[in-house]
Length: 320
Length: 98
Image (cartoon, rainbow over all chains, first blue to last red; front, top):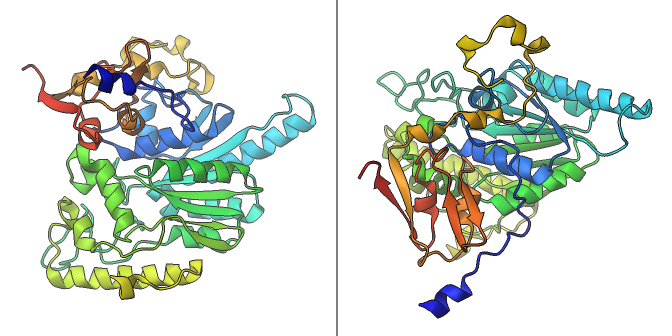
């Protein structure tokens, strides 16, 4: 036993900074993967940053006045203008640097919003920011509904999910009747230097993508799937596992678009059936076989389209 | 300014509601929310850091001197992610108060 324990010595982690930029003591629900995603993103960027954050879960849990969890300069703004405020901060820094009022060092400007603050309410500000080509990283932490006000549907809620404003019942047996807005493709269509999807369950991939976004010469958009145990009605300890399943079933594929070139982040192999992902999630409990088959068909279709965009040969059907 | 909200007078509030002390939320102990407590087995642990990386509350830290991980029970909410994600089951969740 002594020999075995001698081998296992705690060595400092490589490529994973130890500093915490979001302090303990925040009031996120148990097992919140959204705050985990934020923790990883901030670690990847480092101390020199200014963060503008739209209203949402992350703002509610981190800054109940007079307390704050943030160890970095942080501005809370309304739902619709996180991207606009970040644009202003970036321009302000440029002007101050030109006048010699601040030291000439790189300061990353980060805007962050939930899926409501990005895909619904903050959409025009974000689109304007990307169109003006300002050097801001926009991070969307997507938990697929308005969770902090009590699980109302957003345009990022996937088809079939039951929320309090799209409940599954006799009239609408599927719950949410529309498909998730493909925000990453919309951002990529603006022709910005860097766009990517990520998930904190694959943290090395996420950190690499954040660092790429930081080095991009212009705006960058990151869409991060963050599992919400409360809203998805899953046990808190399985938050990481469901993130992995969302990626492995093709419901939320990981890819990046760098200067117009699409690239798949995980090797294309046979997808797991979507039922693996739906099983155990309370928001999908009402789905019958017909609806599941319908969703599976759509997921396959989207996956094939993505493979084509990324220039990967279709190999799933022959080998599976 | 870490007093509770109802003890603060308006003269103490900074212009614009600015909070000048970074990270002062650590004065609020979320550990009181916990109903289950992680129990750590040093002998089984392979020092892979997965619990540290996946902890949403940043409540786990390394202790290089004693060659082990340490839980900060002031902030651990007992979500069980560390126990579930541990590849060798070195962490076990136990009911609080047992």
